[in-house]
Amino acid sequence: MMIHTSQLFVITITIYAAIIDGAPSANLESIFLRIYVGTTMDEYVDYSLKNTDALLSRINSSKPTVLYIHGYMEHIGKDSIRTIVQAYLKRNDHNIIAMDYGKLVSDSYMTAVKNAFHVAAALTVTLDKMVGSGFNSEKLHIVAHSLGSQVAGYLGRSVNFQIPRITGLDPAGPLFNYLEPHLTSSDARFVDIIHTDLGFYGIMKIIGTVDFYPNGGRRVQPGCPLNATIYSKEDFCSHHRSWRFYAESLIDETAFLGVECPSLYHFYSGKCNNNTQIIMGYGTPSNAQRNIYLVTADQSPFGLHEKGTHL
Image 1 (cartoon, rainbow, N blue to C red):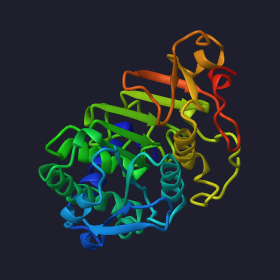
Image 2: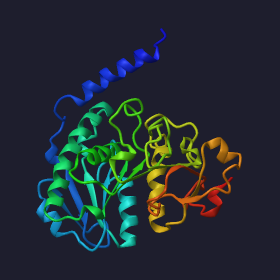
Image 3: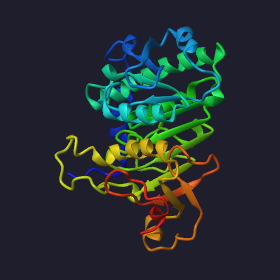
Image 4: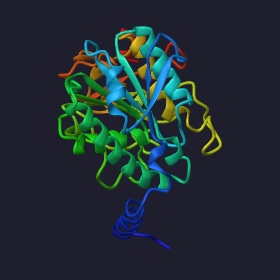
């Protein structure tokens, strides 16, 4: 039986409406914010979303603050959080906060998407209270992976202030490819996106102020297996490259250089070799725009510096 595009759209809307309607499947009280207070992963304090005053007392107002939001089927102990946090700890120049909402995204994907909206609404209240109590929102940078990027987008649309920067690491695509709301360039003053699994686990749309496409932005990323069992660790390899690239950029800010280019074809054919070069990752300049293409190595260190701007 052939399903037409219009029918698929109606089916998708029906499913989406059912997902976002109703209460979360787990208690929102299980969410907590972990702030790292030393130089190692073992030095931290956890706070509930309601304990904003105590959290604020731990923030060094002279430093910028990064808030990391993990993705589907993750929690505070997973590799993405540990890798990103360890890289920030090496820099030793940020207040580092990671949110754990793992109990709300450990069920089916559709349930996790529904819960993500509730998580974002709860975090919105917390951030607004923090700003109302003196937190400098101009020093906030939200970094988020996969479904966490969609949580970040909701925050940007909902808080009573403008978020300066959201970095979306391969924002989740399933259910968000065809419908809004999803993370867009209007959700913060500057939104930079790193695509590594376009059209599979990652969103296939151009959604940022600037969108980066390392190795074309698609699977199979260099060094990832060609034939992986679906939903296995190996299957997520390309999707996870986004946060691995970002973590590396925290240590070497110029590791990932790309060039402005209208398409992957133009990039691979060498027609963009002399175009403007733009840094991908932590050091991305706030005036960066459009689509940026680059190539990487197939293992860490992934960044190729100048060599990454052309084949």
